[in-house]
Length: 505
Ligand code: HEM
Image 1 (cartoon, rainbow, N blue to C red):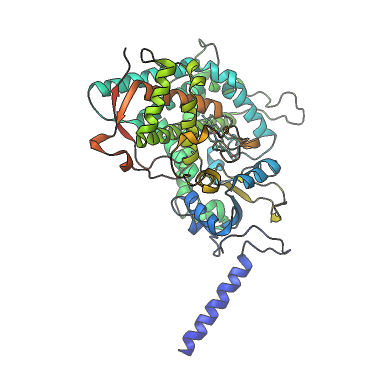
Image 2 (image 1 turned 60 degrees about the horizontal axis):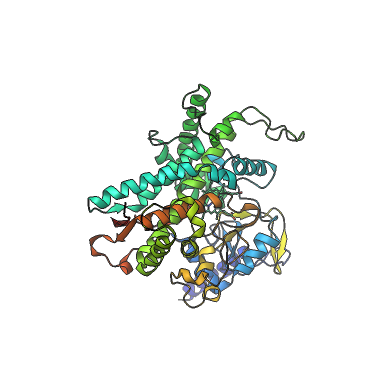
């Protein structure tokens, strides 16, 4: 037994030794990171994240605080879970945290950061962001695409009407995903991608790989072993996507699938027209010439940022409407009073739909599409709230946790109750830090206007044209609410429902 005791003592000493030297709360100068759980050697706290990292971090924050630090492998990571802390990091110190980490997915998908969402802060990122806003995401460009939205949503209603007439059940997750794919393909490429059968599977795999916690990003010395097999898959899917876009550029240059009839140019057209031109013509220090790699990287990024995000947001909002028939009826009443029952919703009706707006805010509060936003990275050492945060720390903002905090949303925080926004004037533009599903500051989502108008139109149309029941006599409170973590946070299982047409036309 004395040998056993000695062994325990030795093990205990070893563990304390490891803890002491790898603890995130200490560093050589005695300056302190925010509090957090003790990390293990090599993996740090990665093992604590589980399948739903935003939820694990929510529970850890209850113990360690609203500004907490964890170690993802060797990477110090600050996890922020309150509006005040989010304001400190995303407003007061916005410029320090405005970069992105260099992750494997960006290395492969965007040739090491030649796109936007995972590109380091700097003039390249600024130019790409400017292009995307100028050509597709500004308010006036979003307005230009109204006919596309109208046509695609019209097709959705037609297809749901057929299902209703047959008394069948519809897979709403798939139906909504299809509309968003069509709408965004037409905005980005001026055409449907429906005939390009390789495209969607490639995009799905890319979305999945861009969202996973890849050990190689945090423990670089393990990267060559590719223990999770992600590197192999990343290489395969990114070369598939790049070949795909190479063919599209070739076709375009040969005049195939040109789309010059429209009153606006699609984004792909704009990008190809910039090929071989200087990126910043007025900047002599930046003689960067736009090449194929840039165009391919930017297109992959725009597809990844736009296809699934809005779909997921609509899917959750509709789930909540089905789970709360009272709210569905209240929304239908609003739609009837503004539009009546003799015609379909038009985009010009949307600004009058105040209750719909509250439904959307309430759904994004409980189901933020990017629960931890997109990881930010700091570009210099900084002291925030008395904590020392070294350069190249990662920042995760847990909007999911903020959305469920009773101190912010009162004791009914977990309840879906759109009326809470009646007296509480909160908008989604990033000024109100308690609700920032689109992020805020320099890295805030540039696609917010496009996303919101698409959400409003599709939700309004579905609630206005149809009454809905759950399949097989399922009760609203039996609806499955399981989440699946990835680049976005969709339902784990598809949403099914039974429509009945309700307009008098
Ligand atoms: C970034 C949310 C739709 C393009 C982001 C971020 C969030 C977000 C949280 C990261 C902010 C941060 O890091 O602080 C959403 C939600 C959407 C949506 C909830 C739908 C409901 C779209 C759409 C586009 C888009 C339709 C159109 C192309 C982007 C891009 C970035 C981004 C390019 C990266 C910005 C950068 O790093 O500078 N979005 N988004 N998003 N979003 Fe969206």
